[in-house]
Length: 124
Image 1 (cartoon, helix red, strand yellow):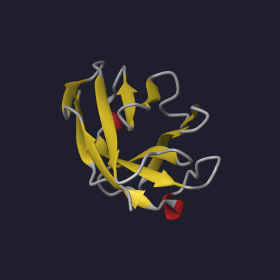
Image 2 (image 1 turned 180 degrees about the horizontal axis):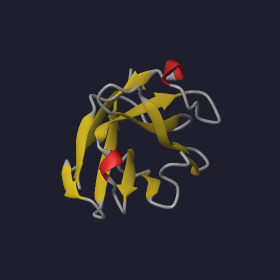
Image 3 (image 1 turned 180 degrees about the vertical axis):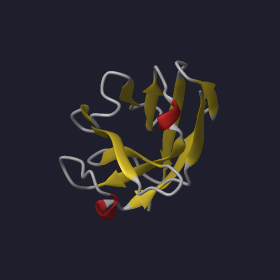
Image 4 (image 1 turned 90 degrees about the vertical axis):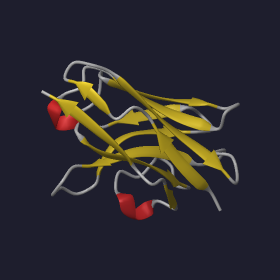
């Protein structure tokens, strides 16, 4: 069993930056893919970025490529999502999820564990 906890400051003006964290307890992320999804009001949960823990390979949605960076800290068993040049449309609840599949699935059905979600609000 893996327990995931997301954290990060939740409000920023457009053009600003935020960093989200996803920390795991119960076991390490080794062998898993860790993915950030987001869900805006009235919309489906969408893929944002993913990292394959073992190889540190990264994947991004077209909408965030060049602005967001996903990374990992092995010692802390934590995945980060650094979000730069934030836009109003990035406002959503952000979730991290863990999958045993590779490459990381871009749909939420294939995920084993989820964090509780953290609200990100970008003001225009």
